[in-house]
Amino acid sequence: MPDGRRRGAGDGQERRGRGRGPLAAISEAMVEDAMDERTVEKGEAYLEGGNVLDAVDLGDALWGRVQGRQSEPYGVTIRLSGGGLSARCSCPMEAMCKHCAALALMWARNPGSFVDGGAVLRSIEEMERDELVSRLKGFLRSDPSLLIGFRDALQEAREGQGSETLAR
Image (tube, rainbow, N blue to C red):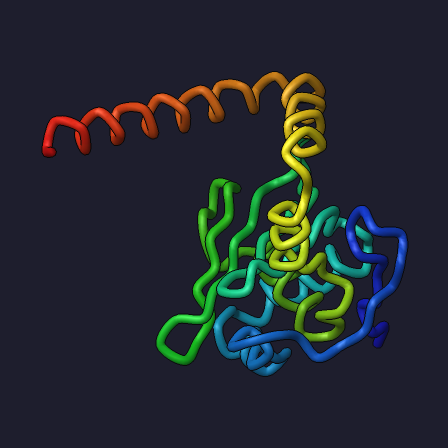
């Protein structure tokens, strides 16, 4: 059985390790306990077929994009909850599906292949302001849909500041 080793999304390097934090407890046995046998088999096929496109360790959750039969990949989030897996997906099944199984199996076999989201966030915090603004503008220009979310976040922040000002 292949070991699920893949390159870390976007970094071009294979990284090894047993995982970080509470997510290190996720094992193949846990995946098999959480999902039915057929779902795990389909997830295995997706993993072996290279359908896991992105994989990020967020510290308290795993996030990934898994290519299904539709043109757009599905977004998957996996967490530990009550000693077991909690998995959500943007596919019509919404949870505990083959896309979730693929991402969870990838983590169980090779957590070092996941991008360390915490390390990326720490790097952002260390950037100089001008460099950060320049890179942010580049991301927003490359994917204009991000502008909508960013605009909404700015509006929420402004409204929150207004509420604080009124409370003073």
